[in-house]
Amino acid sequence: MLARNIFGMVKNVSGIITELEEAGMRVEVGDDFSEYRLYRNAQTDRAPMYPMFDVAGSYIDGSNGFWICGFNRADELIHTQAVRLLDISGVSLGQHLNVHRHKYITPDTTPDPDLTFYSGPRALRTITGKVCYHGEFWLPARGLGGPRSQGVTPLLSRILFELMFRIWKPNYVFALVPKQLAARGAHLRYGYNHCEPGRWLGPDQQVTEEDYLIWMNAEDMANALAGEPESLRSGDQLSVVRSKLTSIDPGR
Image 1: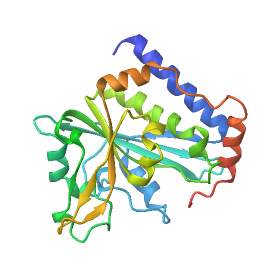
Image 2: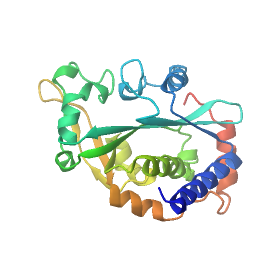
Image 3: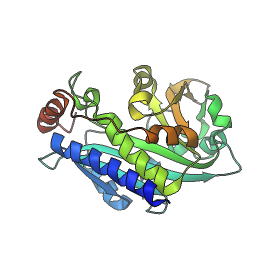
Image 4: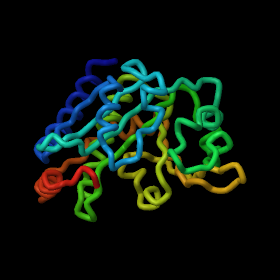
């Protein structure tokens, strides 16, 4: 990695973290997924963590993953996201998802996970190689004035992309988002270029869940990271986010 690239990454990440701290969020980055499991299991009002990031059922550590958590000034967990590096050279993403579907299916959404498969996106046939899976993204909603609508989501995603791209140089990164979020442009807030409709089909070909595939290739990632990160300092945005993060109920 060139020193110039390292410097650019450090500058961008440190600038984002400083802005988030000014807004009331302390950011923590880690690769001990036993620690992350403790954080997630404490969230009793949220769905269980996905098996792909759970050390109880998957091998994941600093060699193939890291997580990002955010805490407010009361030290309450108010943000999570994680990424995992996959080596799927020689197979397509579609083939990978068929084999490892149990780790991607949302718990309790299908009568038989053994007979439930993901289909739809054309990119399932072309995504291969060194691929990163981006998941566990969570930030409490607070209506139209909440942190999601105040520019916090792109900054948090940018931290992950900066670190992920510099560390692993993946060929692709992808995530699965519910249809209702994709319809509202979630992939754009997360920073993804491509969004394709997809669905999980159960044992009787019934649609058990509609998840859209959002993804970027290496060129997309490089272009996205070449631009300056967004800022919360314009107008009253920073003070609005600060008030929302201070008063937020982490269980919502």
